[in-house]
Structures are given as structure tokens and as C-alpha cells.
Length: 120
Image (tube, rainbow, N blue to C red; front, side, top):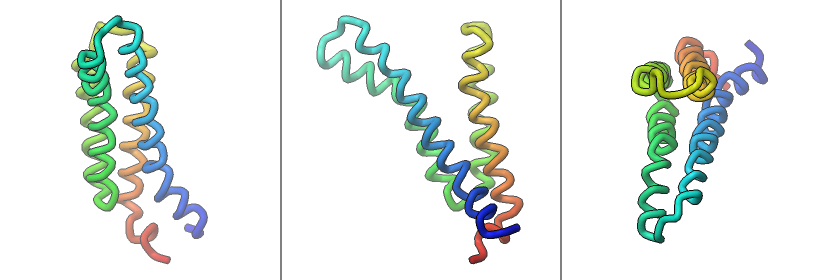
């Protein structure tokens, strides 16, 4: 595996995870449609950002221990589908669980090829 491919395989799940957390963070924008006071808006904002916090926390755990990322991102995907089953259109499931599966698979590949990816 050449150096460019190693860097790509190492960084792509981490970058995708950060982008996914930002995407989840965009979901908080519906808080401002509700006519709430300042305190209620801040509380609603913090509650809506919980999924993004969870994704970032799992990323921090998985940064050097890729097997944790492979397990937890897949578990988050299964949890989301079980929790939200029947509530949304299928595209909502694809938009949330699809990236989680992809990130989980990429962290699994990171773990499998860890020795090759860590060599300089």
C-alpha cells in the first residue's frame, strides 16, 4: 500500500465523522422556528445537539483505537434504526444510518490495516 493510500485510509473516516457531526448539528436549526424564550431556546439547542456530541465522543474514543469506532458506529446505526423505526420516511434512515455504517466500515478497515497505516 503506497503512502498516499495509507494517509487517505487513515484520515477519511475521521474527516467523514467530523462532517457527519456537523450535518447532525444542522438539525438544531428547527429550534429557531419555535417561538421560545432565551432559556428555552438554549435548552432546546443543547438537547438537539446531543447526537452530534455523541458522534464526536465516539470519534475521540476511536481516534487511536479503531476497533472501538468500528463497534460503536455500527451500534449507533442499529440503535437509530430500532429507536426511530416507523417514525420517518426511509430517506431519513438512509441519511443518518448510512454514514454511520460507512464510518464504521472505514474504522474497521483502519483496524485491520493498522500496522500498515501507522508505518511512516
